[in-house]
Length: 363
Image (cartoon, rainbow, N blue to C red):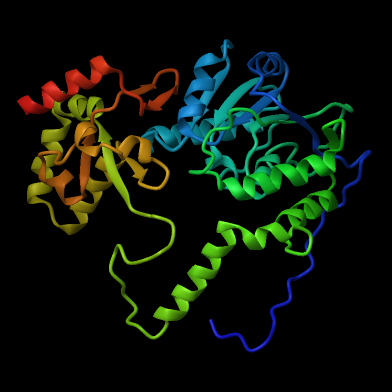
């Protein structure tokens, strides 16, 4: 934390790129919502990746798409089902003959090594945007074969602004992108262009407004906080940190919990857990965790905002209680035969909510 001399940023590594035979990303900015009809049309002959900023928006777009070859991937699938989907998207990416569309959230930005033909994405901050673009023509020998856009960015009714997406950096990013794309709103972006766009967002010499932003003030606040605790004990209270909320709940969809209970699997796990040694208990917990979802308080306030209405506080089994697992009453959708579905649904109808509250009062 105590730096004796100024830190010099290293020169960025720039892959060989130009606007002709080495081009990978031809960007077009659309001043309207995601174009469902165009996505459907593109998916008939290409591998299409759709990335949006929130799970709710991803589920909405997936349901609106009227094509057979479509899949959905986001963070609110159980660990078991998410693993199935991640393997499926990797195999889809490698298949030279595959055609169709994957609707996803930012979980694919860096965690999965996938290579698609065309990207349709909501606008986001420039760092995330370039990560998303990196999923397109990713292969070493893959370049644009036609002089037409393969990166489509949409600016209307963008989800997650002010929550998942920092609104100030979003506005700076959109301004910088519009500047580089020019009046036509489209342009092949080289690696150097991308670096320049980033500088136009984060470099105070090129964007003095960033020094007046809440984003910048929070960074200074964080630095001051770190300096204030450097001589204190290593362990801090759980809620004492000033950084992004990393607290989460481990949940199991109620439909899965009931299925495990009805088939006797739950009771079998419980009986084995009661008499198992520490190693065997860990194995049983690993098996249980396959059916759970880690729900972040930072990203999933919509789901957890009224936690007593949608989550039973205890699962009623020692193995689950020891792992801190809660039962979630929200609907969960996944077809194991087709290996696709909507995952955990945050939005609950009035009828479903009344039914849940009645059941909870009985329990």
